[in-house]
Amino acid sequence: AGRAAAPARAQGLRWLSAAAEPTAAAPSPTPVTMVEHRLAPSAAAKFAAPELPKDAPSRFAVVTCSGTQFKVMPGDRIIVNKVDAAVGSTYTFEHVLLVGERERTFIGRPYIESATVTATVEEQTKDAKVIVFKRRRKNHKSKRTNGFRREVTFLRVNEIVYDAPVA
Image 1 (cartoon, helix red, strand yellow):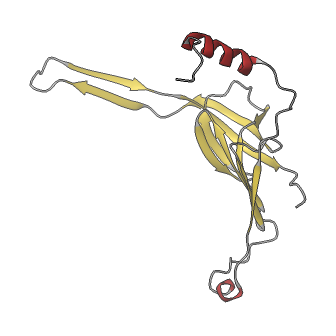
Image 2 (spheres, helix red, strand yellow):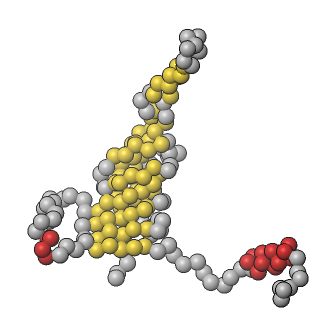
Image 3 (cartoon, rainbow, N blue to C red):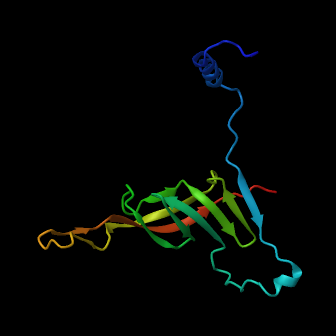
C-alpha cells in the first residue's frame, strides 16, 4: 500500500536511463599509498638494515607481465612468456604494482600510472622441455607421451622511472 502501481519493468528502465546519462565529473587518477620506513628508537638497533654499497641499486619495483608478477631491480635478467618484440629493442612494463626505495614504498591501487620499468630484449627462445605422460590404469595399451616447450623472452631491466609526489 502506498507504492506506485508502475510495473517493475518500467521502474527498471527508468533506473537504466538515469544511470546511462553521462556525468560531468572527470575520473580521478588511480590512488597511490606511500609507506615511510621508520623504526622506533628502541627497535632501530635491533632491526637495523645492513649497510649497502654506494653503487647498489636503491630502487626496486614489482611489475606484472602475462599474469605473472616479478620483483625487479636495475640490472636484473628475467624470463617472461613470449613478448612480441625484436631482440635488442626496448620493452616497457605498463603495469607497475609497487615501487620501493630505501626510505619509502609506493603501493598502487591497483597500478602506479606514472611509473614505468624499461627493459631490453636479450633473447627469444624456447624453455626446457616438459614431458607430459598420460596413461589409464589397468589398461596397458592406453599410454601417451607428449613434450611441451613454451616460448620465452629474456629481458634485462634497464631502469625504473617514478617521480614520487612531494608529501
